[in-house]
Length: 403
Image (cartoon, rainbow, N blue to C red; front, side, top):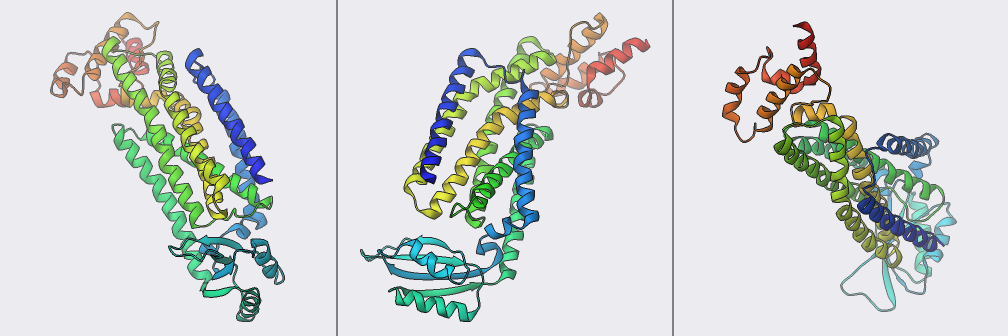
């Protein structure tokens, strides 16, 4: 049943991606123009998934989904005849009110009529374990090994996993800020997108687990999927950011100034220029992952579904969250990137001063030694660093009024 549901979702996503890509490329879809609407809709479904996560935490349901990696439990590795199904094994444990997770073990030399599996359960006492092992042996199972993982070790693993995720997010901010000329706003915006992706992944996983679908366990495999998506999503975001910066550099060399409206158009054009690459890369990754979903085992299927949700969410957040946020915070970003914003309708003297300063900062990277000398020729009694870090147009108009 779940395979049909997943296949239907996959088909819908495929057609949606194709439709949007064609529309965006041919009709120059105005994403930035509708950015506030898009972000409002995003906030609604983001809030929904966040509520689901909080509900699962406070109701205790999410703790039932934690794997033994995080809460402790018992691992039992057995070799069984292939005619014994997972349902047969599950029925044995249900007698003791225990749920199990079954993972196939791939061996170099495997008997044709047998398979080796690992059964994961929550902690149980020695009496229960011995009774279950006895029933397994009566079914023809060969007990290879059993291992107990204490709750203390599981708790430490969970804490370390959360620390690893937090460190990854902080590292992304530092890397992107350094990558884009010490502009921390790019890093913060990218992390907002990453938090969105992690919440969506966890929210979907929790919903599927609460609905009773087997295999959706929050364990080290799920954590690996989350960290993989964090890396994939941030690189997708960087591609758009890089195109924005490149187009901005071209615009400054051409006109030596840019207005807020022009910058919005520049962001939109940058999205359109990269959207085909982003969408079809995402589609290629999804195609591979969904092959694993339909053809892989239970463990691989849940891992592939987690990656699929995260990959799709990452592509969405790069286009519809990160880029629009650049537009919303454009004044802070531009004050660092191009050092100036000029608009129509300013007094002539202010426009002349603004254009002169723009010429200086537009060529800062090519001629750093000439900056100080050129600044001395400008009739503005603020140092260049102060001018750069604030919204210069307001400062210049205030100066003009005071003269």
